[in-house]
Image (cartoon, rainbow, N blue to C red):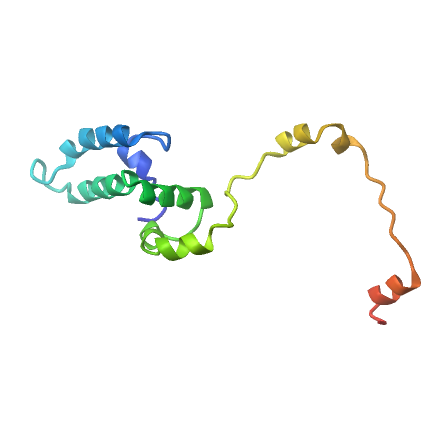
Length: 133
């Protein structure tokens, strides 16, 4: 699975409760059960995997982090290395930046005033900038 949205496989959103996820799973799994219809093994496996991850609170939290990070890593690999990645990615920022319009509104009047920057000039700083010291 590479960048497959487990929520859309089950027909729900990330705000769905475990009960809602199980209800959606049960509604879909009947259509694709291998005993009822031939050639639906792969779809049945996708539904099983989505239910397995999204109904386990720990796995679901890890999967939600995967979606938020926007990583290029395949989902199988991400889930396989869950423990190790959890230790190294605790500092990561979400992938969706704040739109510039919101930033300007939050900044208020100060953002519209031009900034007057003056470069501090001394002989020591000039020597440093020109690699003389």
